[in-house]
Image (cartoon, rainbow, N blue to C red):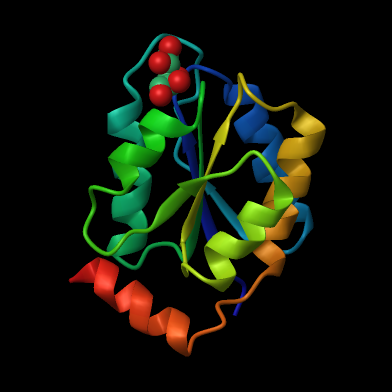
Length: 144
Ligand code: RB5
């Protein structure tokens, strides 16, 4: 089954979000871009939580979030029960948040990294698989 990726951001960089949505669609994923569609100032918790809730409700498999630093929107997403989201500014971390932490969501800082690196980080995140085993024990401990 084609994996469904929900994308959201705040106003920090909606163009980067659209570029990533087109990129993942080209890779064969279903991109579910829930906006916002204008660069008007908005509140990142709304968008992080909406995207995370989409995954929690079964409407998407993975998610990609963007705000200025990636931090605030990640914090909001992680408040949704069962969601694991990490901010990455390098490809190794992007691979490992899936391989070891079974993160469903990747968060990017549009004011921290450029578009080229952002796309490589997305590729690293999407190419990795959860390794399970001892890592599953630890992830279960996060969930409590
Ligand atoms: C918005 O100016 C900025 O605070 C937001 O995009 C993000 O960086 C918060 O973590």
